[in-house]
Amino acid sequence: MERFRSLAAACLGGSGLSLEYHFKTPGNDDGILQVIFTPLLLESGKHYFSCMISGNIGYPDQVRLLDQYAHMASHDLRAPITNILSLSNLMHLPEMEQYDRSAIMGILDDINYQAEKLDHIIGVLNKMKYREPELVAYKNDTERRDLNHIMLLDDDMLTNKLHDMIISRYYKHKKIVQFDCAKAALQYLREHTPELILLDLNMPEIDGWSFLNILQEHGIGIDVVIVSSTINPSERVKALSYPQVKDFLTKPLTYDKIKHLLTE
Image 1 (cartoon, rainbow, N blue to C red):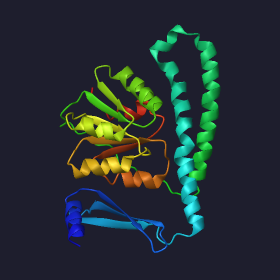
Image 2 (spheres, helix red, strand yellow):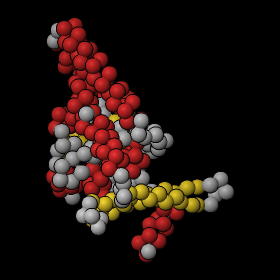
Image 3 (cartoon, rainbow, N blue to C red):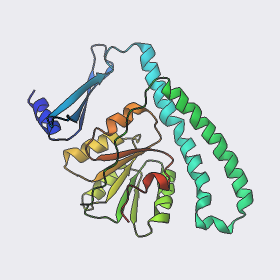
Image 4 (tube, rainbow, N blue to C red):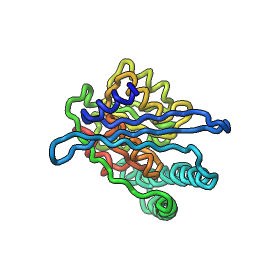
């Protein structure tokens, strides 16, 4: 109860918070209980907060299967598709001008068309289960310690390279560090304070949620932007409940998506 009171007090101060508890049920199944605190400010000027509690206790088998389906549709299928879309966008880079653009463009256009069709189908399937939430606008914090330093954390190194190329094209002065291992990234943060962390959610060993929790526990207040292949709206809501998560972007990353996130 004391823990709940302290979180409620923090939420009344304007901080969004998210907690997740893992436990075993009497049937030895894995149980999850999630609590999300969201601050509210009414026109009267009074502060309130909402508390949403959800979990998978007692879910019917059909709902469990739907949850597994949603994860596969929103992440496992989209991950390679977003890489295809990112590769097709490479034709806009100056380095590609030395090649036969017409031949390459014909191939990439076909790849891009097929990928977009698949991505649209997956989006329709996901909307059958979830409703799209309202997104929180990104607030650009000018009081950052290292405004020319960006961390990319994704277990897919191709994704990191593509994101590096996109950012480097428009922000040549930025120092960009890539990590495909959350442990190595956390070790790096002991001595460095990047302007921004672009974080994937689905990673082995330490996933994006655990990474965010570690940042909170150790008081590491670096801004984080989630860049994920998932289009599961519930994951957007959960991610934006973390105070330091400033935006939630779906892959593939483009300049139009990131230009409001970075300082010149």
